[in-house]
Image (cartoon, helix red, strand yellow):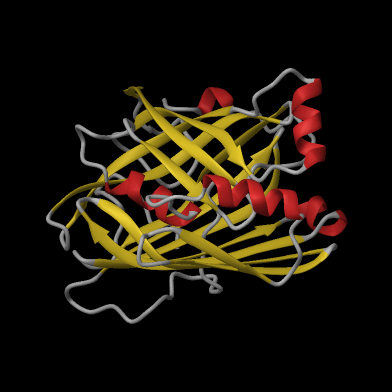
Amino acid sequence: MAFSRYFNKSRTAACIAALFAFTTFATTPIGPAQSADEEAIYLKYDVFVSGLRIATLKIFMNFTDESYTLQGRLKTKGLIDIFASSEFEAHTQGTIRQSLADPHMFYVETESNKGDRQTTITWNDQDVPSAARSYQLAEYRVADIAEHAASGISDPLSGLFSASLAGSTELCTDSYRVYDGRTIFDLTYSAGSRDDFDEGDPGVYRGEAHRCELRYSPVAGLSRRRQAALDDANSNGEESYNVWMAPINSPVLNRIVHVPVGSAGIYDGKQFLLYLDAASISGQPLNIQSQTGL
């Protein structure tokens, strides 16, 4: 029983950390045309905060043994959608190099009550990222980001895809420096323990899973307001979450890869949960014990 102990629908509140924000526009797993040497993985998550379902996240991964494209969307649901509606749409593409995702281009668009924003990130010949924005970012934040920009920095989607590409012996042992166009931060995984999903757990996945710790650490680009709040709280801004990674067989890569099947933690003082409401690999369940939910 992996995290049914975290699941309590009697609690109420609102708000969420968008850690795994990817998806297609479709309500079913429709993505780029798939050929025989391509893999398609579809993951749809329900997100709960203090017992309330407040968002849906969808992930569509399409990859060969050399390249990948990822598409995604986060959409608020329920009462929070009425009072603070927002959508997050993103996609990225790149190459797979030594079991790591090497991005070439990342695009993200956010629609909310405060307006629409678009950001595009590209990487130069030295593998250093730069961003083009539809909005103005404060000069002190731009300067802070430029000071910390370096080769080897990923985008949020590619960073999480790199974690999925890790083999069994490397699972949850790496750290990825990530740039989303507004801030630079580190995502650091630490190995936990075997913690399988069974009939007592929510969602469509059943079977082997490994609970890992995912630690978020801000590096550069924080607003003065956010930095002041951290200073007042005597905090460095680090946040830790539990993430359950499940092994699935990839015929295209001819080896095991791992996908996040659940997450739990505390954000802004409130308990959040994320679990799979639907999932498939090339149209089939992730394993023989699971369902697609489609």
